[in-house]
Length: 111
Length: 112
Image 1 (cartoon, helix red, strand yellow):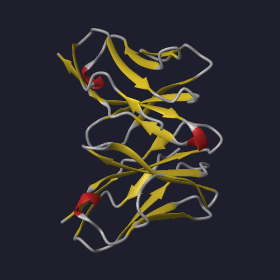
Image 2 (image 1 turned 30 degrees about the horizontal axis):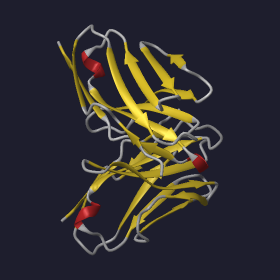
Image 3 (image 1 turned 30 degrees about the vertical axis):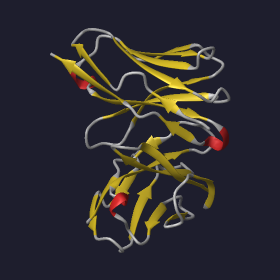
């Protein structure tokens, strides 16, 4: 069945460093992937997405990389700031528009 | 545009009761999806409604049901509440033709 998992449940970085959050997916038929950020007490917030026909997509301070060969997705955050502290989820879209979410990675940014 | 809104934000119920949660999507969005979020299971898909029809359904018992109105607002109902139903219930809306889902703040349900 479809499943999405994260390699690292927690990640602690220093302010100003770059962060890399990883995600593995199992459904090779998934054609669309999204990264969400969830701060305490709030709903998930869309960060960036990527389609399966792309390998890389950049946003403001964030880059998503997709490696379909090994079914791996990563989110890179440049110059990490305290406001980036949150739980980050990757999600994949399989059939029928259904999104499957990973368990999440807690990112802590130390000042 | 206003974001996705959910009411109520917090709710306390006792076992055996039923509850109805409401979600108002972003204006123009026709798809509403519901998720249950718990520390142990993460984000789990409940169901999706598009143009008043249930388009997708997750693996939850029949106690969980929903509906969507002509203005795209959606309600979710849980009957015969169990302790394990305590969770954050999130709804997300999208235009229906794109994949990006935008989430509301959630309704935190506590079942005693």
